[in-house]
Length: 352
Image (cartoon, rainbow, N blue to C red):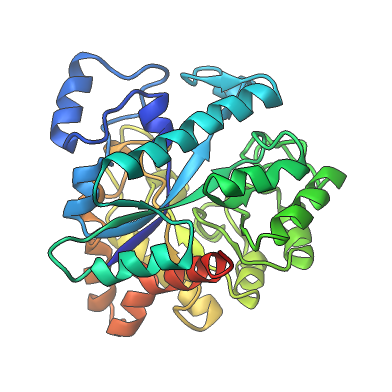
């Protein structure tokens, strides 16, 4: 079993108009003729057939909406108001719900029983794909009191902000603290034991929520700042803080988040670099219990910007082979590729 804690599948389907039921090769051939709208970011990496082929059994399916902010003016769809963000994110949640209705092997993970069913099917001839829905940036939540309505429809995790920041907190591209609205949102989230994702939080706000939020806290897709020194990455103190709370950091196999000097058009970084980053976190924290994978594939970059050997998400299991070659015990490999996220998702879903 493999678990990828962060994929923008609904954004790719709804905004970039990708038919994720197709194979990667067919979709790439189509896009060579008719590129998706907005700024083209490279050859796609994720489709349902590729997930199945790679043994990826659970994903963190994001709800991602882009703000009308100068750095992202070329996005195919942006929001200007909380109402627009709300409508766009609801449409993406509808996509995941529709996928679960129409695809016999897809399950929306809403309860512990749903998670158990996906795990039980893993070794059978009919494995399942579970989708754990996490909102990437809470702009679609128009006011904290409506969290319950999102939960009723399947939301199980929230990141307070994306890069540009929200009314709830500052983001890595737009500094700011946790706000009064943010503190109220945390209270509402805690009442449902929702997952809190700090991946894009401004550093001061991230430390604040670690102190305040009583429920599960993770970074679904973030790398150590020791490799790329930018506010998007987590410093050692944050990595330790997450581990002290029992959290997990999902490593992103994206060249720009693995190598400070890498630029578009340069040779892809070796896949061993991903293992170096994973190993750094394990050595820093003293165990393999607090690191996983959150690829963010097709979340603003394509195959050209992924490490060598990751030609689609079907290749994600190669990371396990390299971990074994580095001397990691099988139990630690399982922890990194699946068990750590299973523990976190089970903690959240155990409340439902």
